[in-house]
Image (cartoon, rainbow, N blue to C red; front, side, top):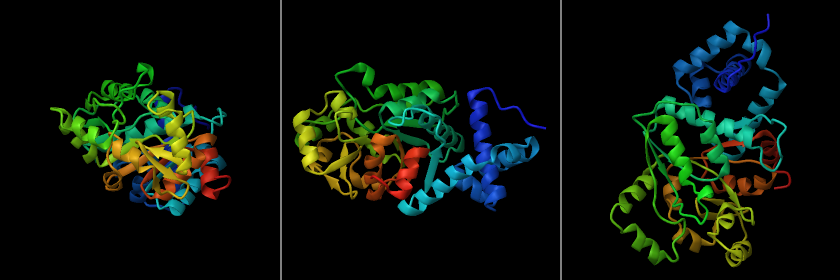
Length: 325
């Protein structure tokens, strides 16, 4: 007898996670502990999901070519780029330039799992439209013992694009404490950055952002569609300088060339965000995708800074084969 698909968003996400757990356990021969580690969930939840799959017939219904293809892509990306974690979100017939719905569901699922696992009591949060959509898709998940902190200054000319909205929504969804860096994204000079950080009440929040052991962030490309350009934080002259330096990807105000090397380091020195070495000491998970982000994602994956990736299926295919990147 076929089982009716869950009608609520949370029910669909749980069914999808059960399908992944079932495929790994029954098809790949992983132990329940292996499944838990792979999916970033507790061993108890892995056991419950596998039991549900067996009880409700999810193995027969959901473990099909589409799911297994996504999991195989995850394996390839983990191996190619030495990642600890990868989640490939099945395509939902969206705009290839920005598959927002698929990515938002994948990001929300990741956040929910991390909150429930409670391995990290402090999570750093980046900015951007995709990350904002993931937080909007997050159900109410109690996390009173957890803290969230913005890992990038975010005063912009347009309030609607302000990344502070992300941290506010997280606090509303979880009941957790949420902290902001009340500074611009870039200081005018490295010296001005130090002056800003020396202001009372600022240094503590910034130190918290730099100490986050788990960071979820978006990835930017280097074009007029970049978040910084669209909000007036960089202009045409600076965009030209970045292009001349060979920059193709951006993470929290740091720019990278196609080989994954940090370039245009003047921007890094002025960015109100954790520095490169601090990011290397954290678990950094990128939430990004779409055809226009493929080159930027390739650059960041080659940098070695990313420990995890949440990406749409079509972009994952490009990254796994490195075609056109």
